[in-house]
Image 1 (cartoon, one colour):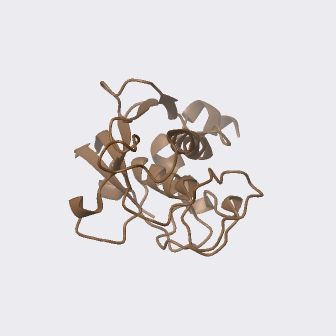
Image 2 (cartoon, one colour):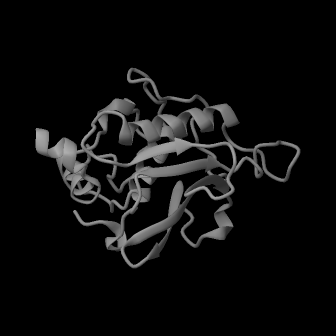
Length: 194
């Protein structure tokens, strides 16, 4: 597996913010399909899925309240903004050479089949016919780190969405995902001690 655009973050801390300015207020043109709390908790859990259970990489995510100067901005977007009508989430990377300068994750506010619950507990089974915000965030955060799609159905980076009932913990960072992350984000001090 190669990195998207052959680029990665050349820093240890990636600042993240949620842009709540669009689609969270039902008085606006479009009401968000899940609550802002469910959105925030799902994002936070997805970030932790990538950086909390292993220590031999040097990057960490830092959630901040202001989007000014944030490396990663997360927000809702409208279907007509993109040609593919079937998207759940899109990650856009701003790349200069091998360096990811900034990123944005856009979640499709027009998708009618988002699960209404947060659906992040390992034992939570998603009802058939809806997409978990957490699952989509985990996948998109992998793109933020530079990972492409995987053909392994157990990987967070598996390319195909599913509306089948699913236990969220069934997907994971695969050995191949970790190999790529360690290659570009490896912490030499910790890697050499193992």
